[in-house]
Figure 1 (cartoon, rainbow, N blue to C red):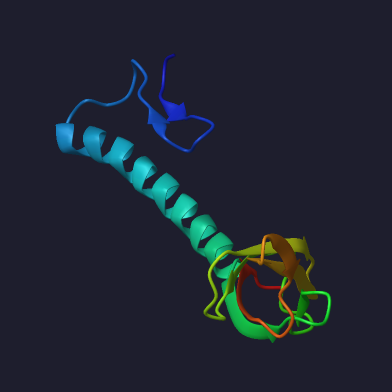
Figure 2: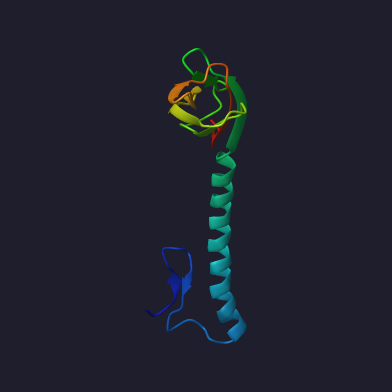
Length: 136
């Protein structure tokens, strides 16, 4: 390569004919190109980060006669299906809390508890639901 040039990433690749005197000019040529490439990457990253907003939502639901619960989510909050967790907050031993479906509009699930040697629907039990996703 006779004279240096910018590579595909915008970083200067020195060539045999690049002026070596003064040395500071030669070194600055390379560092300026790296600084420009890093600045461009930083600007793209800032733009990307500003487009993604994690969004958390928490609610409490009460189980119905079948032990089912539904937590409606605020309309238009989530761009894609969020992640949800659910915990039975009614003080009873031997409960199992299961999330059955998660969409951008609701979380549904059920709570069962073990009593008198059998699993039963947790009628009236309270469930704390936490949802985390990317805002729309």
